[in-house]
Amino acid sequence: MKKVKKRPIEFLIYAAGVLLVLASLLILVQLDELWMPIFLLLKAVLIPLLIAIFISYLLYPIVERLHKRGLPRTVSLLLIYVLFFGGIGLAVYKGAPVLIAQLNELSEQIPMLAETYNGALSHVHRHTSHWPDGLHERLDRFIVQSETYAANGAERMILSCKVLLDYALVAALIPFLVFYMVKDMNTMKRAAWYLTPPSFRKRGHAFVKAVDDSLGDYIRGQLLVCSLIGGAAAIVLWLFHIPYPLVLGMLIGATNVIPYFGPIIGAIPAVFIAFTISVKSVIIVLITVAVLQFLESNVLSPIIVGRSLHMHPVVIMLVLLAGGELFGLIGMILAVPSAAIMRVIIVQYIHMRRSVH
Image (cartoon, rainbow, N blue to C red; front, top):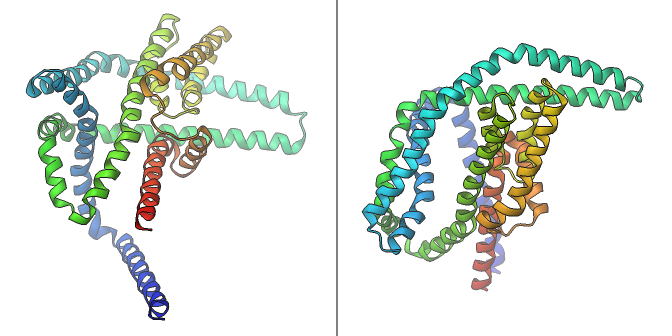
């Protein structure tokens, strides 16, 4: 009887706690002038810190692998460090002028591209005017929605580039943070172990290990695959004299991180630009994207990435659609890793419940 009476009281306390948290969050949102300076300060500190943690997470297993093969830890760390940041520095030094030149050229060609697009749109309207009214209206609505989405996406991309430039000085700290994080990784692991309450240590270690097993190989492999696909796309487009090969190659490589839908999203700008040149250019772009997608799906991903996520393709597609609907392109990129972490949480919770019973 005591347990039965106690449950409603516990539920009321829990509900009151949730309402208190929600009310506190609502008050904080209203008082943005109070917390906005603190938020900006935290963002300035946390963004380079999180990027450094992510890069350290990528590089640490490679350093450990070299160390296990007999290379001193300091030498292996310096080797990977120099190769990684040296490669990025060389790519920026050589590629940035070309990229800026192609972006400037592309911005100058926007009026001509817009004129070609409007001509194609008029052509579509003329050839679909005999369709039923409902179907024709849906096509018009789809075109307007696509234009709005593309415009918003371009605006967000420009804003992101401006933000990156604003944080260029802070970003200079990232290589130093990465060096010391990788160097003192074991010390940080021990500190995290001692700071964790003893009752949560075993479960926390199991959770972190499960997330690492699920996501580690996937993220490292996916980044390598995207780099290879982007580089190959840029080279092929350059060989066939398609304009802006570096910009389009980077876009195809970046969107390839999105399973299934990524190659289609990345191919749209390339096809549109090729459409302004000739039908032959469109065919070249479509064949290039199709061949690269075939190689990625059947050769690169099975070898480099493998099946580390242990998620059914239908689940991945549904998660991607949900992420895209909620947060756009960024949501689609983060959807699969987030779903993998949620899967680990659910599995760990089920194991914990079974062990209790």
